[in-house]
View (cartoon, rainbow, N blue to C red):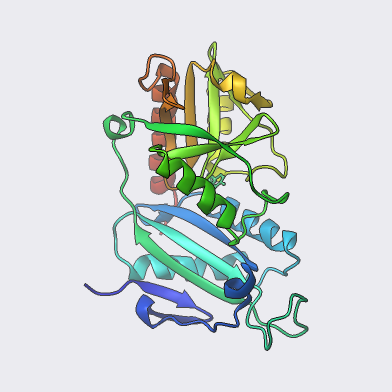
Length: 289
Ligand code: PMP
């Protein structure tokens, strides 16, 4: 199998030839940020929103954006093109760069490390996705800057693994009695026809898919609210969904071993899946190559 093409610090090269120094601060400290962008029909879905979020994550760790938007576009489109025609997801990572010695303090003169790769992505059908997932509540063990999409993912890795080890597909993070987001996703709760999701605070990542779902609700006059949701509220949900760039909008059919609603993907999820799917299709047809 031909290796995938990656981009590393100015060069396009086979992924297995991409090498970084053990003194890279991303490796030593998790001192970096990342993005994941879905690619449908060769089009980068909401690319500008992802690069805007990358730049705010960089600002959050006191780094200057290393590339302009057109420079990012050229690199990302080249990686996608070199990796074939199928749907993909792009992974972007920017770290503070290589240090001369392991020191917590930012080095004075340092060049950021920029890495991009893409992987094939399967677009599930509505029937496949309607099978839904099972989630469990997980106690928050994260730091206080969860709005920054940092590569320091250990807390998320541990919480996700905790959910997996208990036989669930995803964990919903509970902080002081309130549900914040999934370990790899945002979440939505539906009750009496109203879509609800927690407001943006530093306790959750401002998901690009979350924003897309809210704007679809707005455009289609579906009632929605950004509001705090307690762990107890979750148990009264008619429907629960999780959202992310790689999974779109996914129904949750079971919470902590109990059926959500009637234990099947709900009617509002079906409506939102169709709207989101139409948005993806419309987007990929409207962007010129
Ligand atoms: N929250 C967390 C913790 C995540 O890891 C993700 C996925 N990266 C999201 C939310 C969803 O963000 P997006 O819709 O931009 O993929």
